[in-house]
Length: 231
Image (tube, rainbow, N blue to C red; front, side):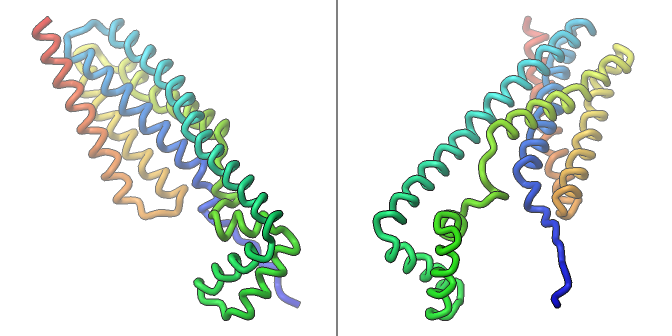
């Protein structure tokens, strides 16, 4: 009797992990950049905090709406493809059976065996077989708009809270260095956690997220300093 073997694949996390990393990364970078831009313009600490809080709320709402609309578009496309596939299965099941068999042949299965596999899979769940092997739609990769929206909004808020906390905890004279260094440290930690959760190597994600974060904050702080001087 074969021994039970249960596997847990990390690809199952890809839907919520992508939204979580994107949300937290945007929260840290956009809020830290906003804070640095306002601080570089010689604003008071209360103005910096006000701008940061406004950025947190607006950003979280924007992330939720953007993710929902974007992932809903993917979901609509999947639904339309499944409806068309269901209609084709109803109108010409033999053609669809042969189409599925050819997919397996292209993957290296012997033609007779490929057709037998197609017949048996379609006897159990014809639409599911075509969705998975022809369209590439599965339970793991299917679009989940509400999950993506809530995850992005929540993680954006958590990420944005980090530079705001640095403003509150640091003396006014050290706001810019504290937020810059602290936010880069948070970004590095985010890259590390995202890589470990997804089972990937750590170094490249950490370098990638800190580099782009540093670039965004430097540009925003520079623009803030220029505008502050002019105004």
